[in-house]
Image (cartoon, rainbow, N blue to C red; front, top):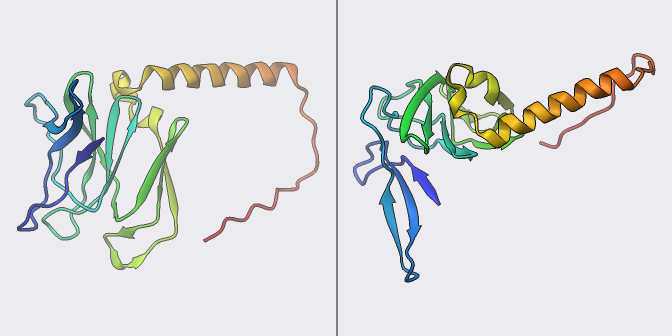
Length: 175
């Protein structure tokens, strides 16, 4: 288990990362994650979401000590103990998950309308997000994407396309 951010008892936003560690004798303790001191330290925040894609921790959205402040996407590389910053995703109290090469962010509140919940789902392409930092893309994800791309190319070459008219499937999502 790994946690990031939150608030102190005086309601100040935090930017530290902690992991639960199990010892050989069966006892547990919290351990602060190491990081290199560089210019890309993570932004303090709360009411955010965070998730792992492979060994890379991605921290999305949230609120800071400044009302309405845009918070960048912060990414922690557990292999090198370094933080990276990406353009902000301005939502808080939302949920997020990763599937294949995409991050999905659903619900929550936007900074412009902090009292009106949103029902929208946003997506972020992980491969595109990390183009300048390809080492952040987990090997299993890049291998899976390459395999999927090769399979799609093969299917295009061997399967003739048949036209079924201009019908689009009726897809409905529950609120």
